[in-house]
Amino acid sequence: MAVEVKLEHRTIASLVCPGASVLDLGCGDGTLLEILVREKGVRAQGLERDEQAIYHCVAKGLSVVHGDIDTGLSEYGDRSFDYVIFDQSLQEVRQPDRALSEALRVGRQVIVAFPNFAYWPLRLQICLRGRTPVTPSLPYAWYETPNLHFLSITDFESFCRERSVAVPRRVFLSKMRTVNALPNLRAETGIYMLTRADTQ
Image 1: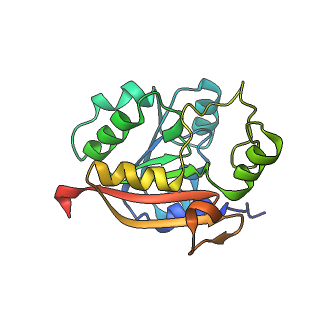
Image 2: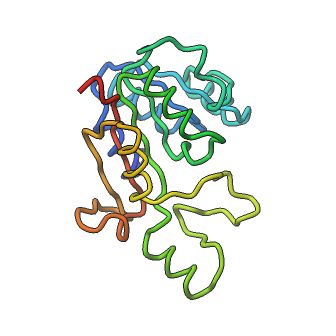
């Protein structure tokens, strides 16, 4: 029986060239890595700190290293991978600026997917209920969320611009479709392909 692939994972997979080397940071149970191995034939490695998630990855035959994104990239050489991926994990690290800088050193290209905190249903929940929003893309209560940083698409655009990070591709998603207009308001998830400006 075929397993349904989330639009976010299909979109990320579409950005990865077949046979590439991939490092998935905060790979969780390996769902994305498994898709990339199966559909793109990538040489995959994950970095994950949760031991139970690592057991799930190993059961799927995936190569995963136990480590923390904030400290675990120093062991990798420059351009060790074709792609480094943050799939819903950049906002969970203590120092996203440093983590992204290290990822751009380690990978030729970096893919970042994150929940857009300026998505209109989130704004509505804050405005009408006056409480921290809980949605499918941000499913945790404030006291149990792994997210240390909440950012919008506009925030991330400014972040990249201020650091001269090149953005050759960007895709915005909401539910089961792409968003082409007013993404900061209408997109639930932002997906960015990044490179160092000096490689353009």
